[in-house]
Length: 326
Ligand code: 5GP
Ligand code: MN
Image 1 (cartoon, rainbow, N blue to C red):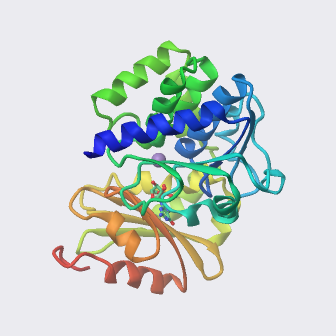
Image 2 (cartoon, protein in one colour):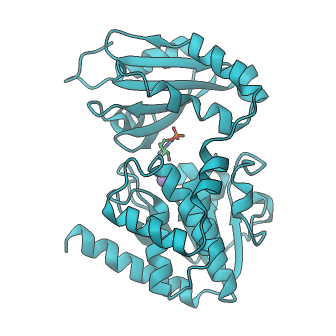
């Protein structure tokens, strides 16, 4: 069976499992983004409207990012401690591996049935039903396919959640293929407002952030290999919202000289979360995987202990052999 048929069959199996379920827990990955939470909330909203008991959760941080809170129109989000201990069906959304579910990964062992929805090429495969398609631009594309298979109506609340994941994971449709553009049009017709959603999700920062951004840009270093990196110290990570901190990598990537950009964020004294972006030559999923993370060829990440210099040295050491080392 080819890859397309495998995904088709998994979509059908996922829809069948969800159609029967009376109780569904949908989990987004830690530090949830619009794709993870949008997938979970789109499916959760539709299942709730079909009469199922629905909980949506993520293991950390404690609070939902401010820009994503409006996606939870029905109030389906619950703190991790309140999540049913042994759900009838568990849906893992946009998590490239079980570790990305954080403490909620324990549900993989207790749920009666697990559906995994994901589009990361580094995903090793987990769960009973695996809707895994690295060709999908976003996990919401797969969530949408499951909703179609379920015969669930695409109302404005669901459309907003799906659009949020689609527009962010494709960086404003820059990396979208024809089918994703068509889905975008369908979602706008169903009530998603592109201007309002992109303004909150991608284009909104408090003025005070410009000072922090200025510091991050001042610290940026371009190495001869084309590795461009900057470090965001713990004080700034704590001072600003994740929306601000996570946006630094998108500014860095506009440097034409950069092959790979790395935003090195200090999340504890000796713990660093790193976002990697590639201009095309270097497969950053391979780099991130070598360092304990994962992701896509053009966008990946990992978290690592050590000093700032040790983390930078690890990135240089994981640089692929056929590309000039920094
Ligand atoms: P970001 O840099 O925006 O946090 O993540 C970029 C991409 O890499 C996303 O698709 C994200 O899911 C993935 N990613 C980020 N951190 C990790 C990690 O620690 N492990 C894995 N497997 N994937 C990650
Ligand atoms: Mn995604």
